[in-house]
Image (cartoon, rainbow, N blue to C red; front, side, top):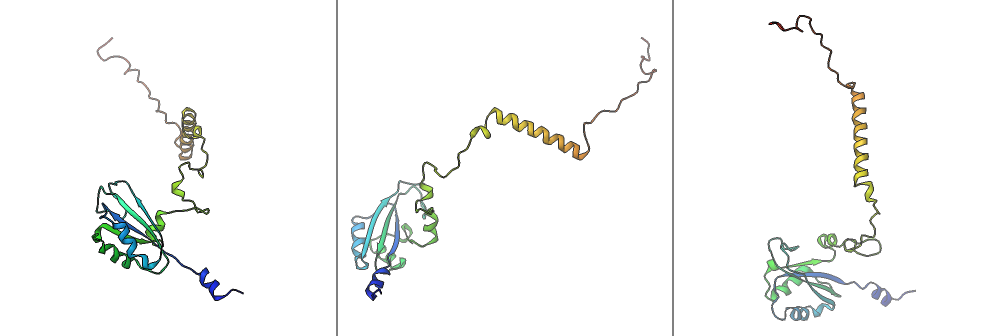
Length: 184
C-alpha cells in the first residue's frame, strides 16, 4: 500500500506559461524576472527570440518587431495576472507583452501533435503524405484522357436530352428562281 508521501509526490503539479514580449528588452530583464519568480520554484526558464516579423502572432497591432518568448515552468501555483504584474514591474508596457498558459486554446492550436507526441506541422519531409503518381494528374497522357472523357460525357448528355445532332432542313429550289430575272 502506498503512503501519503508517495501519493503526494505522484500528484506533483507544474504550472507552465509563455511570456511573449515584443521588441527590445530592457537591460537585465531576464535576470530580474527570474529573481522575482523564484519564490514560485522556477523549474525551467527558457528564452527564445523570433526573427523580425511583419505581423507577429499575438501582436496584430504591431509591425516589424521581433518577439522574445520565455517558457516558464513553475512548481507553485500562479496565475497569468500575477506574472503580468511582475513583467510590468520591469518597465514593459501592457501592449508589448502577452502571457499565455499552456492550456489556453491559442497555445494548443499552435502546437498540433500526433499520437507519438511529434509536432505535425514541423515535419519537413511530409512522411505521412500519400505517394502520388504525377502522371495520373499532369501531362499529355492525362490531358488526352481528360478530353476523351469530356467528349463521352457530352455525347451522353445529348442522347439523354434527346437533341442528338442538329441538321438543317433541306430547302427546295424553285425552277423559276434558278434563272436570273434579267436573263442569262
